[in-house]
Amino acid sequence: LNCSLKLQSAWQEAAQNKPTINSLRELREAKLLFANAGDANSLKISIAAFESVLDENPGDYEALALLSTQYILLGTAYTENRGDKSKLFRKAMKYAELAMYTNLAFKNMVADGTAPWDAADALGVKELSAMYFWVIALQYEFKEVMYLPEKIVNVGWLQKGLVFLNRIEKLDPDFGGGGVEFCKVICYYALPEFRGGSPKKGDEYMHKAVAKGTNWLLPRWARGKYYYVIKKEPEKSRRDLQWVARQDLSKYQDPYPWRVHFQKDALELMKIADQ
Image (tube, rainbow, N blue to C red):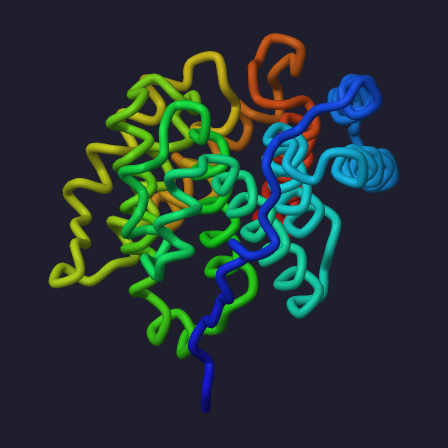
């Protein structure tokens, strides 16, 4: 059984960011579509618009990074089949990686043979979202695609994820509205101790995620969906999911398509629990 995760570095496909009047106009239009993408169809239209931006400017950082988060969302919220999910999550990782390569120092290190995570110190504030989305896509591959034997074989990938998360924290401790901290919760709980795992640290970071994410739905949704399930505390899980389901979406800072997903997912999870 060969179930180890193999990802080919995409540095040879990387392009530098060279905006044109057309690409900037298309980017503005694409961002408006993303801001209103509340279902599968509008999300696919938004994705197509961002891919048009790349036709005009293949190194557009913002388009690459925003395509990454959209492919993650398409995979988790609007795709059932594991194989199809995997294709979308890996596509999201590739777009995030291509976004990182707009940093020339980082790209040159990888071109010289350094693994991306070993070159993370070359990445700066401009690449925060690319690092973040790369880790999120990886974690969705773990959560929604892999069966247990694959998770065991591939758990070392979460160490690579931690490298990027630590880099984000060092560059901007306030980035992500609690999302970076929650990604660390997953790593600390999934990794064995000899690989850096620590449920104690996981608990600390769950607390940090919620404290930091008061204007974001993600931390409470994630705590209800994943953390309290791991902790075997169904009442607390339900309380969080009920809270997410009741919120006025306009009051939160997560991208609108993700807010819609968190709320729908919370309602769905409560319905399943009630069966």
